[in-house]
Amino acid sequence: MKNVREKILLILNDVFYKGAFLEEQLEILKHSKIDERDFNFAKEIATGVVKNRTYLDYVIETNSKIKFDKIHKIILTILEMAVYQMFFLDKVPDYSIVSESVNLAKIYGNKGSIGFTNGILRNISKQDLPKVRVENSIDNLSIFYSHPRFYTKYFYENYSEDFTKKLLKANNEKAPFTIRVNTLKTDRKFLIKKLNDEGFNTSELDFKNAINIENPNGIIESNSFKEGLFYIQDLGSILVSQFLNPKKDSKVLDLCAAPGGKTTHLAEIMDNTGKIIACDKNQFKLNLIEENTKRLGVINIKTIINDATILNEDFINEFDYVLVDAPCSGTGLYRKKPDIKWNKGLEDIKELAKIQSEILENTKNYVKVSGKILYSTCSVTKIENEDVVENFINNNPNFKIEKINDKDVLKLFPSTDGTDGFSITLLTRNS
Image 1 (cartoon, rainbow, N blue to C red):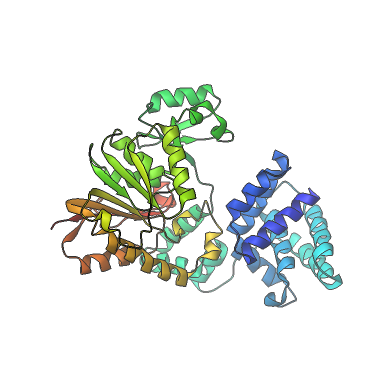
Image 2 (tube, rainbow, N blue to C red; image 1 turned 180 degrees about the horizontal axis):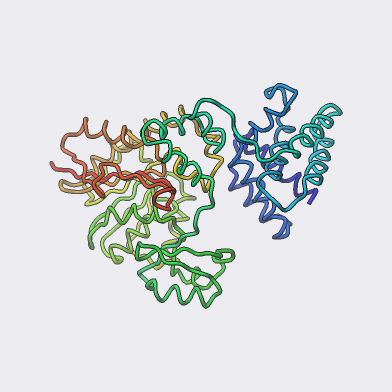
C-alpha cells in the first residue's frame, strides 16, 4: 500500500495544482500494473479527498499551529489524504494512517514538515468528526459539504436552506450507473434478462428505456455491450433527447454531439429514419460518435467537423430540429466529476455563457419555421441557462419557449430527480 499512497498523492497534486482531470488520472492508473484491490483503494481515497476538500482543509486549519497558507502544498495534500481516511473510512487504523503519512512527508518534505505532519495528525486522530463552527450559514454549508461558495450561496438564497443541504449532500454521494436500452435492437424486458444471465443486478427506472446496474464492474466487456444492446448514459442526459422528441423522417442537427449518447438516442426515437447531422470541431471526438453508431446499429447519422461558434451557411433553414447540448461548466456533474468544483470558478462560468450565447445565436439560423431548438447544459447555474435563454428570447422575438413540465427552464437535480444536474429549454421558431 505504501507505493499506492504515493501514487494517490501524485494524482491529487496533479489535479489540485496542475490542472489534471481526476477521471483521466485514475484511468491511467487503472491501466498501469496495479491490482484491482489497490486501484479501488486509490480511487476511493483520491475521489474522497477531492469531494471533501474544503471540509478536510477546515479540520487541518483549525488544528494547525502553522498558518494554513504557509503549509507546503504537497504536505497539505498528505494531510488531506490522512484526515479523509480517519473520518470517512474504517479500513485503516489511525496509527497506521499517521505512520504512512509521516513516511510520505519524509520523501517530499523536510525535518520540520515531518514533525508537523506527525504532530497534527496525532492530535486530529484523537477527535470525533469535527463540526464546522462558522456563524454564516452559507459558509457553514459550503465548508461542511465542500462546495464552492458561489454555488452554495445561489441555492441558499434562491431555493431554501433545506433544498441546498439536500443538493450538496447528494452531490457528494455516489451516482447510480444507468444505461439506456437500445430500442433499435432490443427492449427493456429482454435486456434485463440477458444482463441478469450475465451476472449483473438490475433495477428499473420510471423512464421506460432506462436501467440501473447495481454491480457494473466489467459491463463494458459483456456480450450485451458488445452487441450494442445499450448505451451507458445518465437518466438526465437520456431525457434531453426525449424532450426534443423528433418525428420520424425529420432532419435533425446535433451541434455539439460527441461522444454521441444523445445523438444515437435521437436516432432511436426516429427509428433510424430521416437524417441526423452530428457535429464536433474535433475529429477524434467524431470518431467516438462513429464507433458508437456502428456498435448500436444506427444508420441515419452523418458526422461533420464544425465549430458551433461560427455560422455555417450550409445549415441555414435546413433543419426541423436542432439539439444544442452546449459546452458548459459541468456544475451538474459534481457527484461524478468532483474536481469540477475546484477547476471551474464563477469567472469561467461567465466566459462559458458568452460562448453559449454565440452558439445559440448561430443556431437560430439553422432551424426552419415551426422547427424546434432544444438548449441544454449539464450545468445548474442561472448564468448558463436562464440568463442565456432570456437574452436569446429578448433578441429574437420570433422564437418562443415551449414549457417542459410547466417550466420555462426545466432543472434536474440529483437530490430531487436522481439524475445528474441538467437544465433543459425547448424553443420553437414561429416565423
